[in-house]
Image (cartoon, rainbow, N blue to C red):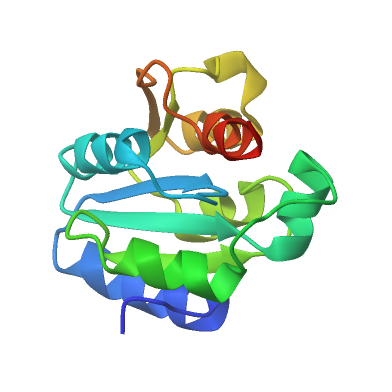
Length: 154
């Protein structure tokens, strides 16, 4: 199964690293999956051999986005992400940042969208400490879960 609990994640990543695989990691809410997400995840996967996606739990999404989010529960969001060919592993995390996941799996490449700046990302600082690199992938203009929600509320 592509959806792993945190205790399973470390062993899976260690096995891939032992096989010489380059691990790429990204994280986010991925509430309403759209073309921008798919393009982003596809580009991230091309940076290595295995793409691990840290998915914010429902509680952490509420803290980040407000009480009306997420629209889709974490189990559904994880299943949709796991169904994408670009995604190798999905793991759900409770914290508001993915620092602990980056600390635990030490990916070779940490990826975020171009709507962030590297100095805003505590995960990027951690990656730099062990020699990992951070890549910012340009956002797709006009594509966001928030825009979709606004359109629906119209």
